[in-house]
Amino acid sequence: MKITKINYGSAVFFGALAFVMYLLLGLLQWSLRDVLIAQGIAITWVQTFVVAPIVGAIVGYLIMIVVILIYNTVAKKYPIAWTVAK
Image (cartoon, rainbow, N blue to C red):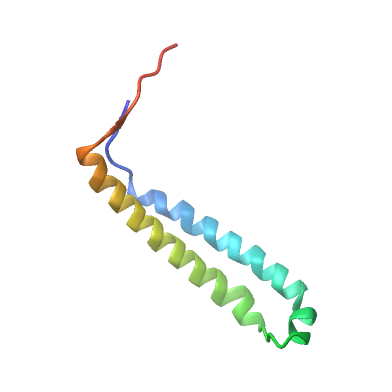
């Protein structure tokens, strides 16, 4: 089996994964908001549940697009191959 090209649609999975990760991080921040406010860190609902997850998902998606582009460029010259036996 030889892998010489990865589909760019695979980056959508990583964008969704980043969205979920930042949403869970937002839930953690929101649950600790009293402690954060006591230390002078102000957080808002919009920042926690809208801006951070969406920006994180977009950044994660773009990073994976770049990684796939680099892989596809390198894999044309040095493909990854292996054999599978039953």
